[in-house]
Length: 270
Picture (cartoon, rainbow, N blue to C red):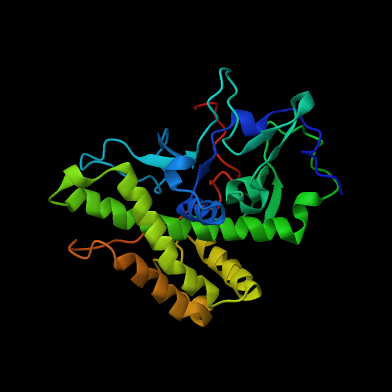
């Protein structure tokens, strides 16, 4: 089947600011051998969501990380990885490495189970038809994204606690946050590799069942997660391995399966 994006000129990759997780950043940085500063920007959150990181102890503003925009003299600035073609169309230059918000766009969950097309997107109404979004591959992507949100939230919570309690706030900066995330996900890589892709998918299914009950397995114990108890302990221990002088490290916020927008931040901010 030809992708609905192949001949579309609606400009999603030009008009949206694509906020990402630390895992997305790590995948792109390692896949392209780039420093995060070469393609990531920091943007203030319009609405705090529990995954915003802090840069000063006042906690007045929380931030997201997002893909940078190309420096062009026009209003609809394309994603830094966008490859422009003739006729107003184009292609993603990092398609195999694209963030989860791009992999799941324009889908969202209904009743925490079924993936459907969002109504607040630039995609034409009839673009995704014939049950495409109901195929298992889409559900799997959305489930994995929710898991990545919580693993990222764990990292953010430890960083934020450190920012609020460090005796040296003058050392807190954006490059330091990027370096922390890169080290965090590098340490997580062998933990991820301990599961096969099928095992990871099965874990994500059960993980999201927990999220639907109000709290993820990072924060609450569930019998259904017992096959992956050691992996969960390892993820928690990895996050706790940073900022060990902080008195009481905390865990991350749980994403809400009913309200979380799947597919990025629909905005023209640059």
